[in-house]
Image (cartoon, rainbow, N blue to C red; front, side, top):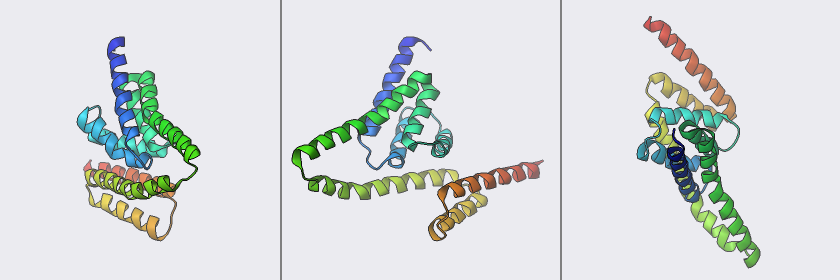
Length: 187
């Protein structure tokens, strides 16, 4: 890739993820639908299936899913410089917002307005996370086995309070076993 084109792509990656980081409250999971819209739908940097695979991998890696996703996309498109551009783009807005809020709180001495703000934002964050989960689920749950694994995961998580890491590992193992059995059945 020519240096000028790579620099232009890195700037575009930075601005895309800066915009996402600036207008998303509620953490990484609330950013997923916005990242998908820009990366898959708008810029077509990834296919939908590749995006879903990336989300699965970035959830398993340590750190916030939005940061991991940004770095993954940046590295895929422009190597280390792309990863740095997306990392800065997605994290810089949060840093600046927290800095401004801290200065505001110090200056005002009261947090009532800030608490009311967060009380209003909270339901919107829940809706964004729910929408991202439903959208990815509807695109990826295709077979009866997928429905069974998903339903079992929800039951185990909600009613038996099984740790999500255990559920993810178990679902991964079940998926591997199912795929192997399916491949053997096709032979």
